[in-house]
Structures are given as structure tokens and as C-alpha cells.
Image (tube, rainbow, N blue to C red; front, top):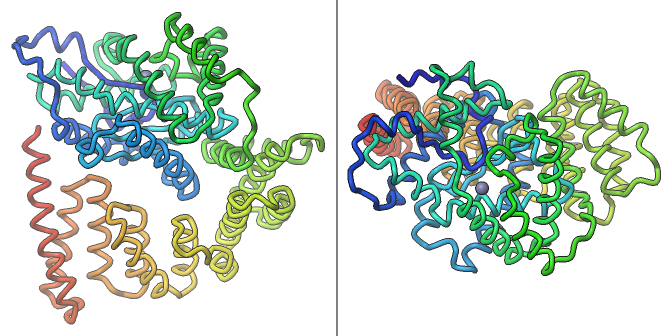
Length: 497
Ligand SMILES: [Zn+2]
């Protein structure tokens, strides 16, 4: 039967991966229910898959890239709303979150319920934000067009547990293009892969709607076309290993013809490099290639970069080199490279901010907490600054300051797991055990792991009864309420099995 090892990384999955196993399907009675899966059923199924993505060792939480991608994603969502592609119901019910995987391969995929997976490899392979946005807009359109629910409805007699298991199996099977045999028993990988894909019509629709959403959101339509060219080129080279995206997005003649028609709307020009994007692509390269040899190669690249290169290219190379030096525990060199980056980015506000954040990160890694806090102290409301300055404050005996800022943040962003985790650290450093355990519980809940969250809420209840933080009546009453909510969520999750 189905013996898939879910602890293997699930990040390598094919783009647009929706699993419908032909083998399993054939064993089921085909009853005449053809209605689409409801949005709440799809959301619940998505939670199951997203919970595994969060637990996966390849899942990466990087405040800087998260914020960058989030900005692009929010613009696309606004574009989809403006065009009426994103209904109020789905807007409200789905998660609409992009999760990063540190895989170097080029891939992005939609998960039921509005989660999207994005490999760092895809960020580093794009030259500007328009190209990256074009892939996200395509995946977004699969979700808004309910392509997932249409495929899932064919499995409506199947239990959510089995469907979730099939999706996760397929995700693991796609890992680096060849891990399928190791992951799946019974050689089902191929059978499942072939059932994963959206239909050709769905792909064309996602191209068409995605193109509209992209331009509505103010991105350059050339991004769609140059990304398409890039994929087509890789397709000709048969570069399937590093382009898992191509396995689910074959460059068939209809898609190419559609794209040629679109070129009349957006004449082909060479993709304009974008300095901020080049820096984020450099960051993605470093984070997805943490080996010493790769890190050294970024240093060499920055030292030997031709002086005549574009500013964007110089900025990308220097950013990657400075971060690589910091990761190699060479703060002096990292600082020197970051300082060389400053005049290159001068005049571009967003790029200057990224350079300052990089300097803060380098100071933090070097243990210079005061400098890290100073560099990351404005603007206060931005998330990356909050993350770096909180880490520096917690390290340097200023946990109370960190806690008060993080508390304000989580009040407005209760689903921010990383902020809750930092807050737990800030409370712990001040000996506020009850609050620390509750913050940890909230982080588990934000990662959708309700049983683990419930364990911690119960531990917090026990602490409260023993009198820890005895004056903390408000906290204790919040803990009671949240424990009951978590009991019900954990029960619901267990019932779905
Ligand atoms: Zn697609």
C-alpha cells in the first residue's frame, strides 16, 4: 500500500503539484459526486500539507527574503482582487502565504488552501522582480481559478488523510529530481507524478490570468516573457535536474503560441536588471549554497567582477560576498565588502536599506550587538529590522526592550511564528517562564502543529497553577482560553485521519 517516508524532504516537489494517484483511484468506488471541493475543505487539506512543509528541514525562515517575496506577493494579490480573480470568500478563507525552501533547483508550487512553496533557486535564477512575479502570478492563478479544487473533487470519496499523504509523497518524490525511488515504495513515483499535473487547459488559463494579474499589479509584462524564454531554453537543453518546474510546465506548442501573441502586447526587450532584486538573488545563492567552497566562490566573484558591469550586478556580487564572508566567520572582510557596497547602492532607498540590514546582520554574527541594534533600529515597523534587533537585544541583556517591541508586533501579527519564537526567547532571558511557555505554544500553533501547541499550553496551565507568575492573572486566563481552542483544533485534526 502507501508507504511513503514523509520525513524525507518534501520541498522538491513538482510545481503545481496536486496528487491524484491513479492506482489508488482505481480501487475506489466512483460515485457520482462531481461537485468541487469546498474552500474550507481545501483549506483544511492545505493545513495538513503546510504543517509538513513547516517541519521539513529544507524549510527556511529568512526575514529579509521573506519580506521581499511578501511584498511582491501582496502586490499580486491586490492585482488579483482588482481584476475580480480573487473572490472575497477565498481571500478570507485561504492562507495566502509563500513558504521558502532552501533548495537550489528552480521551482515554485501551489498547495491547496492558498499556500505557495518557492525554492531559493528560483529567486537566484531570475534577473528582476518582474520575472519572479510572473511565476508567482501563474501559481496564484491556479489557486484563484480553483484548479486544485477541481482536481481534488475527483478524490472526494477519499479521506483527507489519504489525499494529504499522496500530496506529501509526491512532494518528496520530486526532491532534486531523482529521490523518488528512495521515497516511494512499489515504484509508484512515476504513476503519481503523471497524475500530478494540471491539464494543459489549466496551464494555459494560469498563464493567461497570471499575465493579467502581473500587469495589473504594475510589474513589467516583459518579465513574463523573459521568464518563459528562460524556461524554454532550459527545456531545449533538457535540463530537468535543476528545473523541476519544467516537469510540470512543459513548454508545449499551445503555451508557446499564446506567449507569442502576448509579445505583441509587450515587445521583447532584454530583461532590465534590478539592483534590489540582484541583492536578493545574491542572498538566495548564499543561503542555498552554505558549503565553504561555494561561499569562497562568491568572494572570488566579487573580487574579480569586471569594473564595467552594471551597478545591479556589482551590488549582487558584493552583497553575496559580504554575506558569504560573514557566514565564514570573517567579520572584518564582511564589513569591508559591505562598505564597498554602500557607494554602489547610494541613491536607491530600498537598496540602501538592504545594505544597512546586511551590515546589521554582519555585526550581529560578529557579536557586536550594540552596533547591530543601532543599524537595525529604524524604521521600527519593518519586520527584518525587528528580527535582527530583537536577536541582538536578547543576546546583550536588553531582553525587556525586545519583548516589548515583539509583543506589539504579535498583537498585530498573531500568525507570525518566528516572532513568537523570539518573544519566547526574550521572556525566557528575563526568567518569565509562564509567558515564555505560552509564546512557544503560540509559535507551534502558527506552524499549524496543534498537538504540540496543546502540550505547551497545558504545561503553561500547570505552571500557572503552581503559582509561576502569580500576579499574571490576565496571562493565565488567556492561556485557559487558548488551551480550549487548541483542544478543539487538535481534535478536529485527529478526526480527519
Ligand atoms: Zn502551472
